[in-house]
Amino acid sequence: MMIVGIIALCAVLAILAFFVPGLSRRPERGTQRTLGLGSRAGGKAPGVLGRIFSKPFRSSSKAVGRSGSAGRRSRGRMPF
Image (cartoon, rainbow, N blue to C red; front, side):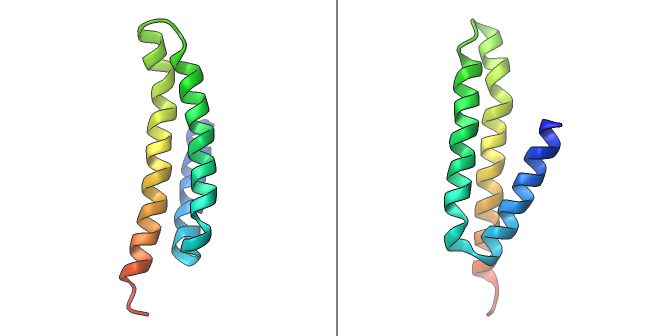
C-alpha cells in the first residue's frame, strides 16, 4: 500500500512540477521532510535493522526528488 502511495505522490509531483514549477517545490520539500522523519525513526533500530527499516524511506525520498526535478526539467525543454 505504501508503494502505491509513493508512486501516486511522485506522479502528482511530476505533473505539478510540469504545469506549475514554482509552486511544486514546497510540496516536494514537505514530502521529503516527512519521509526523512520516517527514515530517522527507522534508523534508530539497532544494527542492521536500522538500515533495513530506514532504506524504504530514503529511496522514496530520492524518488520524490527525482520526479519533481524531472517535471521541471521537461517543462524547461518545451519550446513554448
